Image (tube, rainbow, N blue to C red; front, top):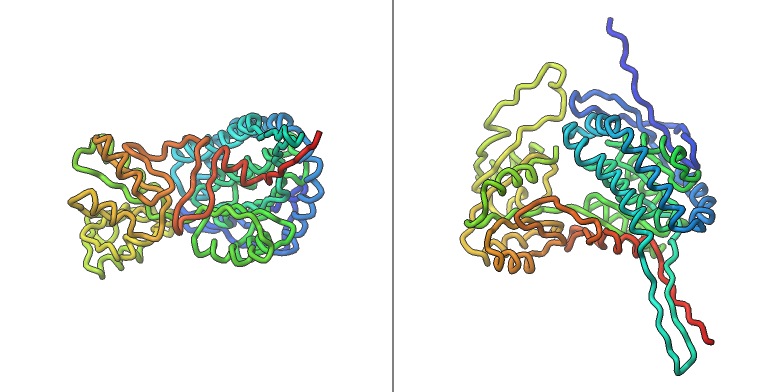
Length: 433
C-alpha cells in the first residue's frame, strides 16, 4: 500500500514568528487536483494579534530614515533573488502557471518591486512656499498612515503581494497582508526571509485565510486605516461597505475586459504572437457552453478538440486554449472577465465602430492597439476608456508611471508617485518668523 502523502502545512506570520492556527483549509495542486497544502483558516482572533503586532512596531519602523528602510528592503530583494528557483518552482506548483513564466516574470518582478521602491523612496520631494508680506513660510510633510491592510489575488501571487508590501513599508507603514487562500505558499516562503533581511518583528505580518473571514476582519478593523485590494469588483463593493464607517483610504485594482484592437495595417508578425500570449496567459468551461447556446462558433479548443492528459493529471484543472467567433457584443463572453484561456474574435469596419464597441463594457483596466498609423494610435488611445493602453506591444511597464483602471476596474492608481501618496498622509506646516 502506498504511503500517505505528506502535506505542506502553512502557519501565520505574526510579530516575526510563525504561529499555528486552530483550523485549516485545503489547498489543491492544480496539475493533479489533489490536496497538497493546508492553509490557516484565520479570522478575527488572528487578525487582532496581527494588528497588535503592527501597532507596536509602527513607531520604531516609521522613525527609521528612508535610507535605513531602503537598505533593509534591498537585502530582502537580494534574498528572494538568491532563492529565485525555489520560489519559481513553488509558484508554478501552487498557482498552475508555467515554470518558465514564474521563473522569468513573477519572481523577478517580486524582486524588482522591493528594489524599485527601495530606490524611489529616496527621491521624493516636499513643497515649500513663502508669504513674505506676512512673514510666513509653508511647507508640506508626508507621514505614513499607520497599519496597511493588503489583500492580493491568486493569479500573480508573489508579484502582486510584493507590489503592495514594498511601497507600504518603504513609506514607513507596518502591514497586515492576506494572500489568496488558493495560492499562499510563496507568501509563506517570503516570511522566512524577513528576519534574515533585518525587517523588525511586526512590520510585516501575513495572515492566511479566506476573504469572508480573514479579509473581512482586516477590512472592518477600526485600527487598519488603509486598504489596498486587488481582486473582483463584487468583493470591492463589500470592502467599500465595510470600510465606509471608518473612512478608510482605499486602493482597489479590480477586474478587466481588455480589448485588443487590430487594425488592417498592423504588423501581424509582431501582433499575433503577442495577442495570443495576452489572451491565453491565465488559467471556465461554462462560458464556452453559454457562447454556443447564444449562437457563437467555437473555432478551436473546448467542445471541438480533445485534451489528452497523462494519468496523473486527469483530475487536474486543465482547459484547452479556446477561440470563439461570431459572438454578439452583449454576450457574457464579451462583457465579463473570463479567467481562463478563452478569447473572442470579432471583426469591425471602422475606427468609430471599434471604439464604441471596446468602450461598451463596464470595465476599463487596459487595452491594446495594433496599427502602423501613428495618428490613429494617438487618436484611439485617447478615446478608449482604459487606465492603461499599450500600442504595438503588451505588458511593458514603467513602474514610475500610474497603473489602475477606470469604471468598474477600480479606484485609485499604483506607481512610484501614486503609491507613495496613497501610503502617506500629507500635512501642511506654517511657520511665522
